[in-house]
Image (cartoon, rainbow, N blue to C red; front, side, top):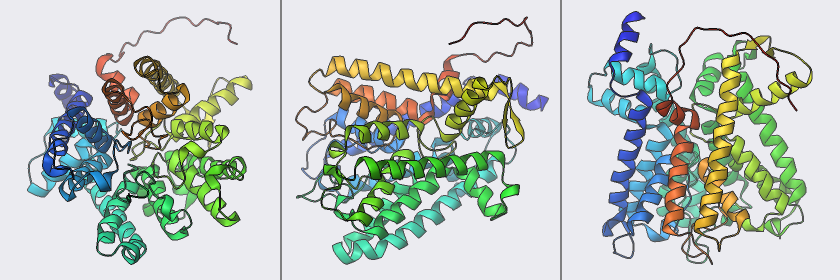
Length: 458
């Protein structure tokens, strides 16, 4: 252990800074490839800010599009975007480590430390094996999803349906929100042409839920099957929180949108199906849509923002402040009201360190969103504040649900400055506000304890 600490001190670069630079490097390469005439159906160079924005969306798994993917990108361009989405879902260190494993390159102690930081592990033992398991697990789930989607897309779209099944399966599990379903008559509809198809929506939702659970939870469930008592506390919190959030979201949307324009023309069963899909896509930050987000009621839009802000779970392919953070904050509030000075979950005491981290993550996330909204509103005053708020939250949480302000076809499309700001917000959201903060703020290792004092609250 002492040897590990000495090695960590010798590192010239904080592990998370190394991960950040890796993400930025991949974004730049992706942008250069997407900007090429070979990537664009019009045969012209893409505007570089658009290429940067598109590549950032791919790496961060966001899905905010400028133009319809299927109509604007060639097969080469779609393949580049596909790789960026897969890279973003696995994460820089996981992806790089898996490549090293394939080519049998030696993985150094510095690499292992960076991997453990990226995966949220507090030790480096077994991280390479964990990466291998994550890569294998990802491949199996995405392949199974593609095979299940295959009949639906091939029957309707022929051979191109094979690519649609593969692309959408990967995008759904990586919670990216990109799709290749656009048609000339419905360029920005995402899965709206399938809003009555229970098979497609349920498969996409299931893939998104698995991605939102996170790899530790999936591994725990596979290992312990249905033996609930053997699950780790983290897995229990994630499973319970996810089930409650998505169920509450489903019934909220069913009530708020039952007579709205978003569900116009649907029968009762289709309204329930699309309520479930909207809830899962927002809370897992997957970003596919089966209805026009502009047609949602005001309460529906606000609740969508809340679900996106909470987001998926730690070490997952989704964004947001995470379900565990939300659960700890909720329990802290209840404990505070009851006058307790200890936070207990399932007969386990949660440390003050975890509570403070939950507060820090939520505070930084809220500030990123609010500051982003203010800057974008000042940059693009013609866009409504409500739309700015929605787009900024969907960028920070890497969701991809959109009211259309980023598209060039919008009445008031975002300026290059606004797109650049959203790209920065996406990057912070993808890597995590706490991880970004730790790059610039030195950890406090002091052991000094000071006398306690009471301050009036509330």
